[in-house]
Amino acid sequence: MERPDKPSDLSEAALALDRELRRFAELADQAGRLKLNTEKNLVRATEALTRAAESQDKINAHVQELVAAVSVTRQKQESDAAALMNRAEEIAGRRKEFTEVLQRMAGLGRMAKEVQEALQAGSSAVDEVQSRMQRIADEAADIARVAQEKEMEDVARQAEVLRQQILSARNKVALLSPKARA
Image (cartoon, rainbow, N blue to C red; front, top):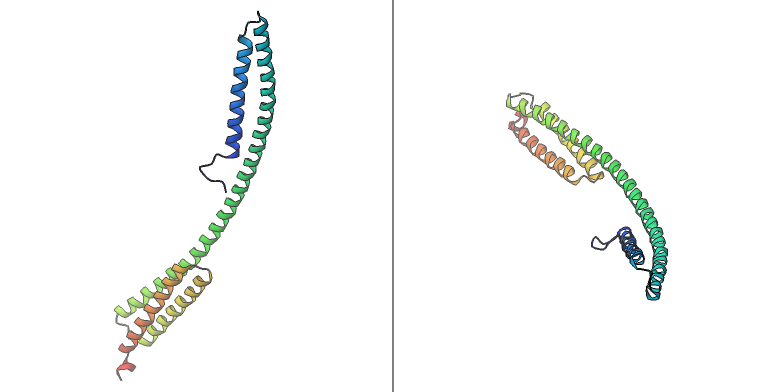
């Protein structure tokens, strides 16, 4: 990877061509301005023409360098674009995986709310409530396992915390059951 503070080959090639084009223009202007009325001016004009011809050769070389730099830059841009598209597909796939796991977590929330409502209503079916709580805990454990396998650390942690909270609440509900009081 190129350093950001270093000019790219493309910009260096363009600058080199620009400098040589300016030099050529100066030489052409100089050759055109000289009066051809003395031998000294004829010599100067001939020298300016010679330097302009040399400059023309350098311009051709710089144009070839610029074309090569454009080609390399285009290839890199295409490669970067392809890598970016691959990354976009990877992100979309990962987003889908997260959405699926988070939907399962939302389902746990609905199940936990139903249990809470049953407890608030004073449900006499404590065994059935405990069984539902165990199913929620088991589902949370499975979500945590899946999230861990898919390297979704925060979701795995949330699912594990929820599992522990549900099991703790289930144990408290068990203490309220008629069997526990007997």
